[in-house]
Length: 306
Ligand code: CP
Image (cartoon, rainbow, N blue to C red; front, side):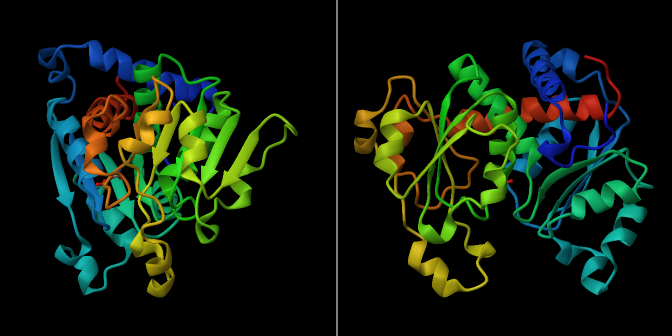
């Protein structure tokens, strides 16, 4: 068992499957049993970047395991605002807690924290790089909703350039024998080529298109993403692409019956509210699965055998 959870690239297929297995065990456990696992243990939630789902689901997960939580939701309320360094913050907070959950706009910051600290470090999103706990809950959701992961056709839509959820998930799916991908993005937000690289020529199919209709008809999972204003160096470029895709219920008439529309959330404009009422909408249960998967992650990284 690795001390930290930093990147999906660090995990073997067996390790990924073990997180999924642990999440299923947690899901089947009563709330009364779960709350007995981590009394007296403290999780530090260090969020240098905004979050609703990741921070609150981690906090909920820890409370429901009987533990408690310290931390911050903005660096402005900490001594970082006075000039304290990231590593000094880590070395201070590690005295007050048993596990560190870190979100930061800087790519590589979670790995830096993991190298610096003796505590387990969980990456809750580092810039445009990785969001492994989101990926694990996405995989858990796909497995629950569709009964399997291997062999599914998956489409990613929107900001494939900057989306850390896409970058994490596509690499994990490739490890789990998903070989057929449709990548729907405006030219400026295409998936960087290195995410498609692999050492098995001809094994994977990446079909790149700007048309969402093509993806809707053929895929089993339609993974929508927000165009992330905060990642654009030039806001003029953001304005050009911000409403590239708006999925509506009407557009889903051509979809396979079992299609799941997933989204890491928050959504801005890319999924119309009328999709919420369709059988295809999987994104709010997906957010709910975050508590279960994060309980499994906390237990595993705090040495509890499941
Ligand atoms: N999916 C996700 O990371 O959402 P938050 O930014 O609200 O945590």
